[in-house]
Amino acid sequence: MKVSRYHKGDKITYTLGATVTMEYLVNSPAQVRAVILHPDTSPEITGRINELCSGREIDVSYDTKAFNILSQKENCFVIGVIDVTAGKIVSGSHVVLVNPSNSGNLGTIIRSCAGFGVDGIAIVLPAADINDPKTIRASMGAASRVNVEVFETFDEYRARFPDNNLYPFMLDGSRLLQETEILSPFSLIMGNEGSGLPPEFKDVGQPVRIEHTDAIDSLNLPIATSIGLYEATKMHFIQK
Amino acid sequence: MKVSRYHKGDKITYTLGATVTMEYLVNSPAQVRAVILHPDTSPEITGRINELCSGREIDVSYDTKAFNILSQKENCFVIGVIDVTAGKIVSGSHVVLVNPSNSGNLGTIIRSCAGFGVDGIAIVLPAADINDPKTIRASMGAASRVNVEVFETFDEYRARFPDNNLYPFMLDGSRLLQETEILSPFSLIMGNEGSGLPPEFKDVGQPVRIEHTDAIDSLNLPIATSIGLYEATKMHFIQK
Image (cartoon, rainbow over all chains, first blue to last red; front, side, top):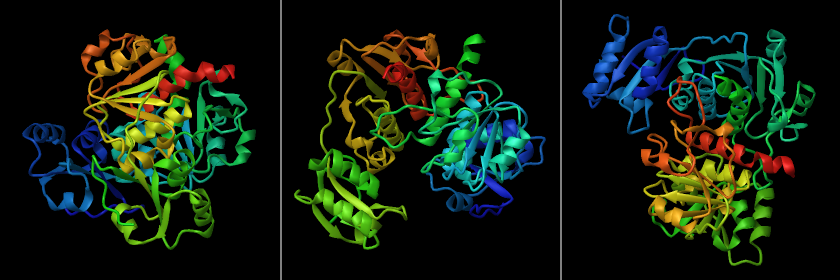
């Protein structure tokens, strides 16, 4: 199986690592074109991979070169070759990321969305590449469970989901998150890591802020997003 | 100024980037031994660095070699040469990290602690190196404001702060975080990224859990810690 370093727009991407690859084999096997094993893969992992691939048209092979090309991590012994698919989100609660710039952050946010039961993420361009192997790796494989759809503009997203309650997270949001009732279906709207949301979002839905001291400029983006997800979903978890 | 790649235990570490270096020059100038500027540093940044260093015994010089040795990032134009000091925490609320293994995560947690006004972090060994340039960079310079102290054992920490209310975060914690009143001074106790806290922590203070779906094994460590910090401090922010 010939592989080459991933570039934005490629039709194929890669899962780097056994856990991430197995998440795809379990949750989204149709996307997995092939699995490459390092000769040092443990027999246990090899057995589980073979089991998950058996009866499917997934090519499993051994190779070391692929690891030199694709992985800088020493502890990566399994690579999945994954078809890139155009994601589509459906009605329900969403996280909306406007111009996120870091692919690792995208992956961490996907992991949190899966953890808090929100399975739709809208990305407003320009943005980091959701199919980057770094995104998939940071998601710990949760990228195989969460739907991510790319939108040209925020208005395009808004027109598709007119019933969603919109909560832009802004440093000067008019309400504290903890004093805001988050109504479902909700859209938690987060801006770029460095610049936040453009000021016009103060007229969108109910802007909220997570208060912090002036010792920092802002919270890290995946952290702010996850605090929002925790606050928005915690009553649901209590009622269970 | 001769520099060499940082190794654990070195007496000198580095701030990589203008923002992080300036945070140290403002909050902890006595720790800054020298500043190295890339010839491509903007006149504005150069001016601010010179202003912050003037009247102090901080050597400012131009060099490109140091950047090749220390920084893999293309957008790093300023390096601070920083004396490593033994940190010491004082009475009050703390985050206690038992065996954290990732230096970037440590930095992200330091940033959140600064943001939520908790200025003491206890690290229980074995642990990632708090003086690693990666930790300092991920903290966005907040490492210059937050006290971090290393403890050989959790019992050593506990004996020093017998009045703190202890909240171990565990996947099977007996109470939901959102149903737990976090009393000050608090200690939010977090385990290792992969393995969590050892089971004996279920008999320590009030174990709490952040509920999540079974789509993920656990939340990312800085995210779980920051949700704990948000929940523990939010009443304080409302009362302001």
